[in-house]
Image 1: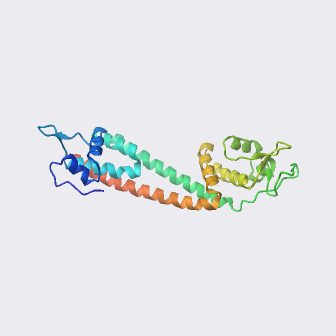
Image 2 (image 1 turned 90 degrees about the vertical axis):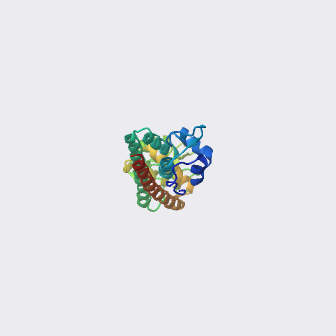
Image 3 (image 1 turned 30 degrees about the horizontal axis):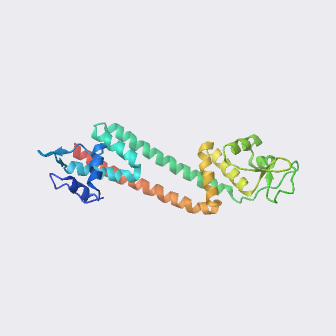
Length: 249
């Protein structure tokens, strides 16, 4: 985080910058953005900083990993303007977003566990397979029946991009292959968990990009690590911000 400069009563911009591995221009920019309190000035007009500015910079740099640059800037600006309640609200919103991200991850993991084998069902008695169909292909009626939903629901999911069945060139019927069945089952589990279609679509896209469910396990482990890292960063940011608030008095 940079060395502690509290022992210095007066700091030049270069002192403050070097103490945190920054450029003097970055320090000036942070002051202009309201992240730092306004600097004092020498009789010749040069900026001077104090341990209070050092504390502000330490707090900001600690807040960024957990809250992001924009939110961290807004938090520091609110504190420096004397509207700490606004800063606390922003912090609460970040924690709420983290909790929501964690719930989403848990929902995805539950959905993947509930999927089990992803073998697609074959065409039902009322369907009309064609020469273009593969053994694991199925049609909208049998798939809807297997999931316990209406065909209209599958059509709505198609419009939302959750499933992408191809059309039989001869009959025009929707044909769902094994990957389509997997996506439909995952969407079904997430819908049962209360997630909206617009929330599910990016998750389905991630499954497709990963090439299936198994490669997604690596992405899920990475997701866990990133959430844990963000939570710890928030704790560190909170400690530095509290120290800065105490300095301000």
